[in-house]
Image (cartoon, rainbow, N blue to C red; front, side):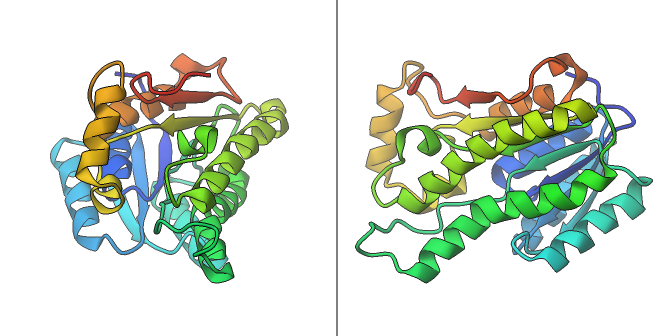
Length: 251
């Protein structure tokens, strides 16, 4: 457990699955957590309750992180609730949306996938930075798809996640002199509703069987990595993308 006492954290997409586990892990380490959700109201209420029952502090705020006005409102709510600054930002918001080949997708689908995964990270980071002091930490969510191009019909998603890797490196260079670290995590096959929705069971079983550890990852394992990167234990790590995939892909 890493010490995040007296820190304020904003987690986008923090109400369910990996985002929920990230919110809980940061709160368990002592951070005051402001997490955002879009349409997962029931799951977000459960997240807030679980954190508070465990003795932590959390508030869930609804908003569409592809809309600047919503982003501003979420960030301001976080700042107003927890005292004027945001020490940790975790950009979890993103998703495959659907599997479409280049022939199948239209411009609207492409734009939507790029906006959900990439524009959201840009907007939230831009509006959080005025409130982030030296010593702050940003953790972006990329994906193994950003490294290997993704599975069938994941071109738009993989492209966006590859861009997150590049954005992370650029931000690390730009924000390092301000004392702000920027890193990314790149999950492989993690057991979430993402794969429940978009990946066939036989494909999941095959991928898990090909993994050196012979299983899927768990959301809590990703959250533990994020907790570390957000903490002072990782004080000399910036511009990195940490692969968490059970050994299915190496860099």
